[in-house]
Image 1: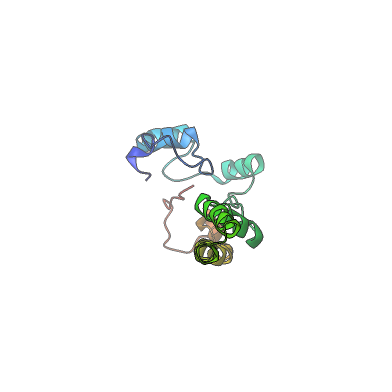
Image 2: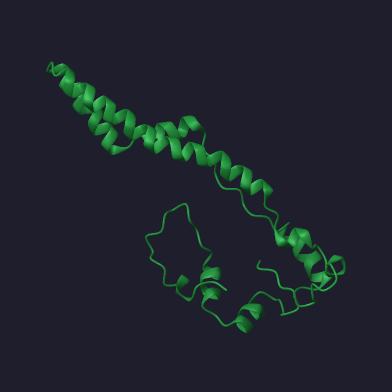
Length: 159
């Protein structure tokens, strides 16, 4: 079940995170109301209804999230306001002859960019690999007749 406070979530959510208005509404509703609104029952969908929905909406798969190239991640790390400020100050220090200050600021820029870039570039391939290994519960048991014995007729899917 989804958290009860989903509908009252702060409205300043990142633009990359989108929640369906229907999902937000159903998160606060009683289970019987949710099943009715979604045209389902506690026993799940009939084979005919599942086939009709598959034809109409397509397969139940997780949408792929946007992956960024390492170059784009590096550029994003370099466009950090602190990095830009340090770069401007380093240039000003060099122009005024203060090479030591410019060197210190350059080291700070390299550290800042590398500390921001390294974790994001390392986690991107790992996330891609883990998403390939995951299989949805629906794909394991495509129909009730092919479910293993003992799984029960009331096994519910989360989607």
